[in-house]
Length: 105
Image 1 (spheres, rainbow, N blue to C red):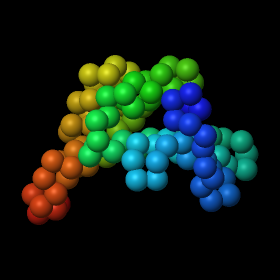
Image 2: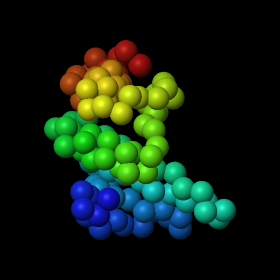
Image 3: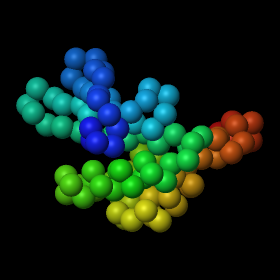
C-alpha cells in the first residue's frame, strides 16, 4: 500500500487511511481480536483506472475478493469488471450529473 498510496494517516483508534480524505482511498480497520477489514472508496469524479489496478493488486496480494458495496455481490478480479461496477454505481451517476442523480434517488 505504501508504494501505491503513500504513508497512511490514522482514522479513529483502530484504523488507518491510505489516500485522500476526499478522493481515492483505502481504509484499514481492525478489531480487538485482530480481525482486519479493508474497504476502498473510489472517487468517481476523477480518472480511476490506475487506482482500480492498485485495488486489483492488493486483492491478489492478500488473496481476497472485491465486493460491490451497493449490491454486496462479488466483482470479478479484472480491470474491466471493476470498471463496469464503478460505471453502474450511484456515485458514477452522481459524478456525471448530480441533479439527475439526486432526483432519481
